[in-house]
Image (cartoon, rainbow, N blue to C red):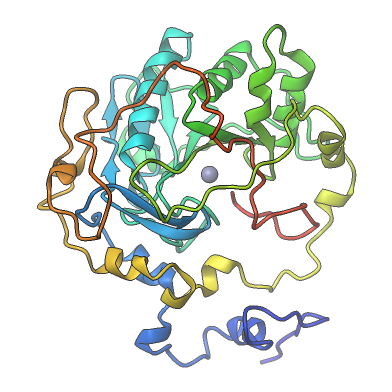
Length: 366
Ligand SMILES: [Zn+2]
C-alpha cells in the first residue's frame, strides 16, 4: 500500500507523526483505554449525565452535564436527522430554540427544522462539527418547516435547499425571501445569543439589504458552509464556572473589509493538506477538561423522556436530581429572557479561537 505523506508533514499535537499514523487508521493498533478517542466515548452515550446543567470547556473542546433534549416534534418545529441523537443541549439552549420557534412563527416563518445541537453529553462528534461540544450551539435549517408533518424517513433523507451559489458565493436571489432575514434577525435578538454563523453570501445579502436597525448584524458572522442552515451560539450560562468564553472582537456590523475577504480567492483555495486530521478526530480524554471524565462517568436518567424539555411550565427532571459534579445551583427549569439589554459583561461577537484569522484550510464544519 502506497501512502502519500503530505508535504511538508506538519506536526500535530505533540507527535510529529500523528498525522501519518492517522492516515493508516485501518492498519493501526487499537488504542489503549487511556488513549481511546474522546469522540468514540462521547459518541457512544445515548443519554445525558444527570447533574445540574453545566458546560465545561470550550465550544470546540469540552462537554456538558445536565443536558436536556428538545422533543422530536413541537407545535412549530421538527427535529431533522433524528437518528444522529444530537437534539441535546444546555437547558437554556433548548428553551431558546423553543422560544425562537414561536417568535419566528409570529414573524411569518412556518416553523423550524432543527438540525444538530449536541450529543447527550457533548464532546467531540464522530462526524461533522468542530464545535457543538458544550451544549451551547445549534443548527437551524434555512428551509421552512413544510405544512405537512415529515415522516422519520423524510427527516433522515430530505435534502436541504442551498441558498448560496457555490461558484459566486452569493445568495441565490430566486430563493432568498425577506422571511429569511426576519428569522435571522429574530435569532440575533436574544441577549443569550452571542453569534450566528452564516455563509458569507448570506452575510453579504444582509449587509446589502437590511434597513433600519442594523446593530444586530454584529452577531451575524460569515463562515464556511452554513449555506443551508445557520448556527446559533449562546454564551456561557450561569452555573458553568469552567465554561470558557469566546474572545471579544471589535464591534461593528462586519460589512467591511473582513467580509470582502470572503469574496477573494484565498478562502476557497483547495486544501493543501487534505490528510491532516481534524482536531475532533484525535482528541483523547486527556485533551478535554478533566471534569469531562466525570461527565462521561455520570449516571443516566431513567429515560430520555424524563430529560426532555416541554417548554415553559414543565419541569426538567434532570435539574431536580442530585448533581454528580461539584456544580453550581441548578435552575429549576430553563428560562430565556426575550427582552432586555445586553449586559456590558456579555462577551458577544467574539472570534472563534480555533479558527483565528481564517486560512485556506479545510473548511471546518462549524
Ligand atoms: Zn453548527
